[in-house]
Image (cartoon, rainbow, N blue to C red; front, side, top):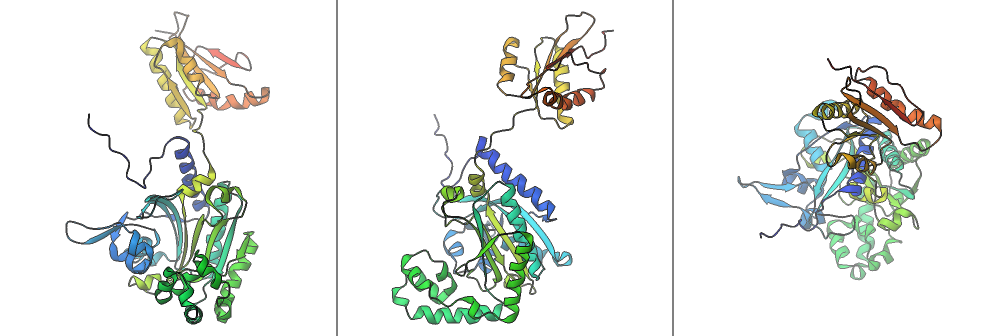
Length: 448
């Protein structure tokens, strides 16, 4: 017997309750992005490698260690997308979307990074993503953060705080960078090997190092506030006051940075609070959703200076916080208890009409006729529609509705209303309910 292939390390097959949680995250994101009038966008899952190397930066771990890159048959270097922003920026420039600016874009889908698989992290993973391109005002940052905050709340995720910082404008950032280099050069030999390398290539990244050797010096490192220009300070004040007005809670995180030079002003992450349920599932240092303003990115891809801000969040990690979600129970199960083809066709038509009326329905028509109701009962529907041959030789079939009652009479009445309405759409004679639990009757005209 041939050996069964196994899934590639770092990938996953999603099914059952996990798949329902995944779908719930995506469906909630789609609903919320429409409330904020973000337009859906789709890009290829692979791009020319330079799109990511120029946008993300040659010195980053993503580009130097984690990208899935390959030469195609034409000898061109291509890369499976490790993130969304670079591809969106490329699409914005190559398709002339400048004519729509400012434009609010949203997408979701698979991404690829060759990193060590761990809880909630995979080599093929999925993200939701939202970007506002062409808007340089603080209000764009506020709107994007308010959208993220609402999304997390509608997912039912609590115990999460927005951590916020400013990187200043170009001049502020450059002055801060120079001060950080001078400060860390004084303690270079005591820094971790990674931070010694970052000191030359990307000194701001030392501030978010988790290494204990680095943390001892980070607390006393120069702060961005010492170098903010008046314009940069006013921008950040407008963002924070806008968040307060929108009811979005936040806290200052002075060590939160973005290492690449094209990042400006706002940087943010939603992080679980110590002791919260979210922290228990992911860890208190785990980022649930993060992003920032990247006003210089378009220039790195050959475009004109274009302000932009965006965020992304891992669907798998959000699904872990949402928790398992059971598959929805059908509102109606149509049970064919007969033997004749005419009643089987009727049962199929009834089930189809329920679905056309947007009533969740399932058809049980296989197996022993005597056991079909038991099979249907295991699906735990709110209603059963039982179709069988009629005892009246003048009728084609009997159709009975049984209601699973969970409360008083009024609740039962409200539960059965959608069923009665859907049955009525079949164009049959008016249904008559025998009692509050059960309706029985013949619904087809007499045989010719």
